[in-house]
Length: 322
Image 1 (cartoon, rainbow, N blue to C red):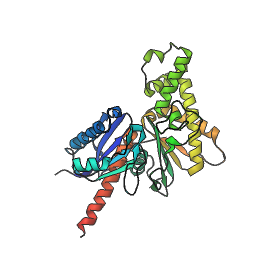
Image 2 (cartoon, one colour):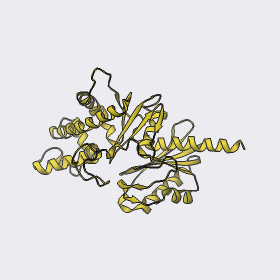
Image 3 (spheres, rainbow, N blue to C red):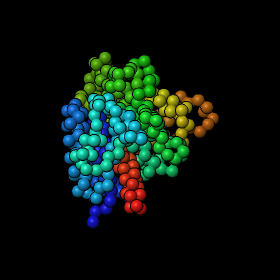
Image 4 (tube, helix red, strand yellow):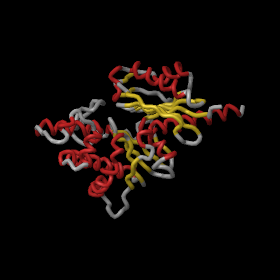
């Protein structure tokens, strides 16, 4: 007999991760596919349904949790719009529930990652902590009083869209200029490197690797390429401004970094600590610890799965009492 479990899905701007998790909090099954949001809503929905179908082969599923890169009403679970995917006025909950036949729970993707790290990761046992996701965009989640805080409309810690400059590396999908994610996301890191190469006409290490992504830039910085080191240094200075702002807002014990860029965290986290301390007020007071997410790129999918498992298992227990 298959163990009761839940499906957790994290819809990112570049990839979709799906996991199956259960009581043990271990990942029982995992698969990753390309999002390809440019193909439109229906194409992405079909990918989700295929992932759900394959996940059902791994366990007896009692529900589905999905992390979305945008605001989700924490009471109704309604998804209003997802600008990073080009979605507006879609009813993903209805579409998936009808096709898959399971209850579906939605969360903001960064809130899902935060929940995952609090259940079984770098935020476990933390009373006041923050998670920042650095990927195609930038998101965040916060633990207050030992619980995930999502805000009235699921917008709490939507830090990718806090304005920290008059301009960014590109115009944000939300329509504003100077959003945090247009300065500190993987997309921003790559855009900055491209802009510098165009301006300088460089024929160095990075120019020989066009088209490149954020990982290649980080690899170059780690290997000592001066151009990549400078790009990453300036990226970290912008990130340090955001870390300072978050510290002033929440005074957290720990700030955890997830998302694709966290993979190179062993290189850049010590450098960020120095820059964040330079930014800090009240230097006599201890600074928050900066850590990498323990669940890595699966934090969002795991968090959505943990939340779904806990919610739907509890619902079943209540039903069985009557």
